[in-house]
Image (cartoon, rainbow, N blue to C red; front, top):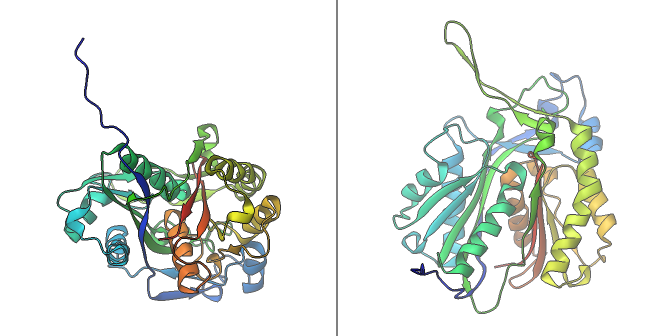
Length: 331
């Protein structure tokens, strides 16, 4: 029998650079409350959100991703031509094909790169980290650009009291490549498709005259909240165990910025010491789905709460219902 040649594990993998992009338009709660018959105080109490960013009409998932990608490449001191693979996590790219990753790779000059989108919504960035880590360690790529980018303001029903205030736009990116020591722990991930109705954006609809009505995001808030606080603590503990570290070894906890109450519940469950920084970027960014983890991590680094080499615990969770978590070192 002919044996098929396969690449051997050739290296360790780690984060080499980090970058983000935040739209300039700031949208406070007071701009949204009239249509949902609510108040700033109600939104803050329910979610922890004070404001969020909305992209300009001309901005797209791809253009924001490109800005974050270029920042991450500069931070890593890596040229776009060195990138072997672009993995872009999003659920708001408005083209079924081609992928946003292909558009971004061309725009930044990553002409040698394969490109693919990951559709795992709020877990997408952590999923993409797992895929990139495996590609580098297996030797199928030396450097991978991972991006999370969302323009959720295009798919919001601004009259929906349960979702209108939650979401924002933005993008974040990391470069993953070969490192002397392993810088990314094993990814713990999964999905429960039986609960697909909990967070869903149905297909666009057409009238008899072929006029199109774009679909919007809907969510069963209490179902998702209960699932996250009851299940994600265990997922985080499994990720810590897989990396063979303890909560005391972690410098920062960077969960998907879904809801401040979920973050607080997970912090309590995991029993982090007070020395652990907790990402609370949701206050000023809202829920940016696949972009939320890199945006929050970059904010912690900007504020000096984490430094290069620090261990952080990342966890993403949302529509699918999908989840993924891993420990990583800050670039």
